Amino acid sequence: MISEKMQEELNEQVNKEFFSAYMYLAMSAYCNKIGLPGFAHWMRMQYEEESLHVTKMYDYILDQGGTIHLKTIEEPPLEYGTPLEVFEQTLEHEQFITSYIHKLMGLAVEERDYATQTFLQWYVSEQVEEEANVNDILAPLRMVGNDKGGLMMIDQKLSVRLAPTPLVA
Image 1 (tube, one colour):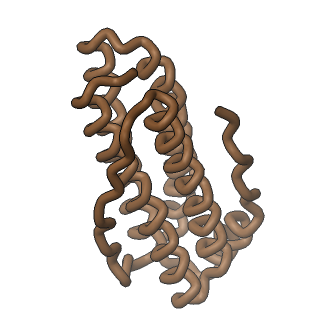
Image 2 (cartoon, rainbow, N blue to C red; image 1 turned 180 degrees about the horizontal axis):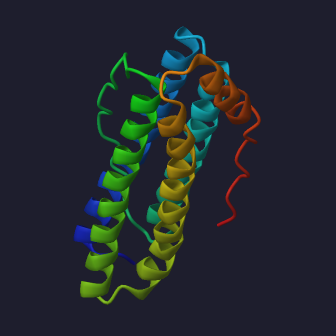
């Protein structure tokens, strides 16, 4: 059983994860629009991954006897700028999510909620991976700048990202 406060904060995170999925789907559409199908594919796979994150947290709240409170999802932007700016915004967003996951973990520690601490540890590790993956793309993007040949090589590399594996509870 989770506390009312933890339930409220986990529901906030569900909303943030839904927004993440929504934003990555919008970024995918934008990348398609600017002629970068590999970037679009990477963002589409990120959308799929975020959708799995939502489901995992949703199920945890229910498994703990909590109540799901689905809130309005903020509308994501339509435009994201250059490919470099797209991934800079991606990193900024992932860092925001990381900070909120840390806030949740802090609350779980404060409340001595060991089950939620164990559950959230997966998200803590996942966020390390998320930020590293984005940084691995940002490095070559910063090197090539607006060089069309370099962007096309990166686009090709991003086009082979595999679909995320469904999470096991």
